[in-house]
Amino acid sequence: MKNVKVLCSLILVLLPGASAQARESGFWGGLPAGSFTPGFRLIETSDASRSFPAADGQAVTERPMRVYVWYPAARTSSSPMRFDDYVRMALEDFRTSVLPVPLTKGLDAGSLDKLRAASVRAVRNPGAAPGKFPLLVLGQGLYYESPLCHFVLCEFLAAHGYVVATSPLVGTRYRLVNITVEDVETEVRDMEFVLSVARSLPFADPGALGAVGYDLGGMAGLLLTMRHPEIQAYLSFDSSILDKHYTGLPLTHPGYHEGTFRVPWMHMLQARFIRSEKDRAASPSLMERKAFGPSYLVHVPTGSHGQFSSYAALGIDRAVPGFWGPPPPDSKAIYESICRTSLAFLDSCYKKDPTALMDLLRAGTAPVTGQPAFKIESKTGAAAPPAEDGLVKLIIEKGIGQARTLVERLHADYPGVQLVSESVLNWLGAHFLYWWGREEESVGVFELNTVLYPGSSNAFDSLGEAYANLGRTDDAIRSYKRSFELDPKNENAKAALERLSRPVKRAPSP
Image (cartoon, rainbow, N blue to C red; front, side):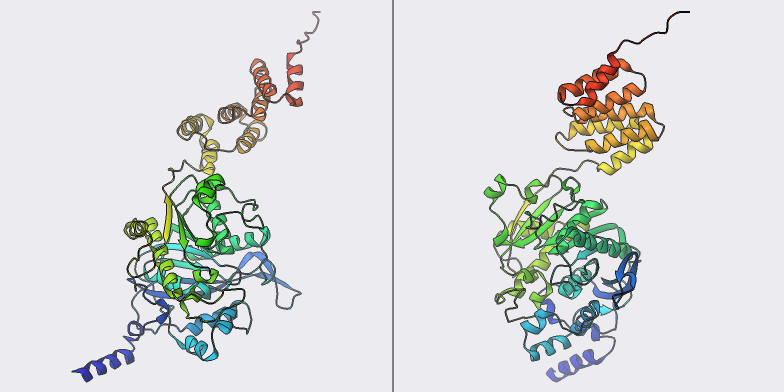
């Protein structure tokens, strides 16, 4: 009977229809297999809206884009890819023959050859499983520019019902990525491009979008989330977004607006970089400042930045300068916990299944299913009011009469929350008054501004201007007086009051 079992096992391996299921990947370790076979495809295209130097350094071409997509696939008889397939794609990403440093310096030649020959879980270009699945766009990091760095997480999420799309991290005009506003913006735009390509895939659910970011991609992913209200959750790894980075980024980016960061957020960070709660109470981090939506801060017990990448699953046994010191003995187990925790968070957001996440929150520092458990801080956050964009659009399209009632009610329900910025309302009122032919409505816009910002001299100054233009002199004088009271240095209000208060000269009777 024993020989029969061995023979059956060999047949299963050799039969084409069974090879994909029988050949397991060692990269996943103890991670659960999931309900789907991870599918993979590479989409080579270009972004015609942006230019990039050609290979000869003289001509200019469209920005080349290589979009990596992992997705839930239908059962297939095709064999899974090998790790070498990802390595070769990494070389193609940057037109280089030099293998990634963590592989060449972290492993001896024999181990690397064995690794490159090993099977991964993903199958290339199989048909998708029936249905549509949440779409996650992933931002890469410095020194971890190729999607090779996150293949395990991407395969794992695809096996559990997610589409994950990403692209290599490339600078604005050359491969080198600088830690500047310009290059961070380039990564945001790359993520936007990837999102637009992946949304058109028939198996991606355009109504269930999320962002994931690692390292510099964590900054870009945060900005992407702030910019796009359709993104419903954000997952970030070991990125300098909790506290201010030495460059000032991402806070110095013009698109950084914490008031628009309202979605569920999980941030995983090396525990040594997380300040004490007492320190953060005195000098709040983004965790404390984020007012709306649930937030989770995960203390990962590692001193290695690379621990958050798929390199942690490769069995690297040497220190790699610029990447990490000697890998800890529990490196794979910690990485598997990072993957499990990520899935638990995403399932709570997109599948409305909080069970696994609640188990992790209750675990404290005790092991969960044989994996290291992390300390996880959490806060519920308040329910978010409507976004500014929607409120401004409502005023423009439905009129200030209908919108003002809603905004004033929201102002009462959310004390201290900026619903619409003073400058936006002021600029909108000016458009109504001077350029859009909606002079009467401009008064309502400026009046709303004084309700939301009663201490603003400029708000009352603008309201006085609207009243004066409509011939409502008494109302104009009253508004300008209030503006001058709030700011006695307001020369415009002072001059307007002098002009409006002069007696009207009547023409002599004939």
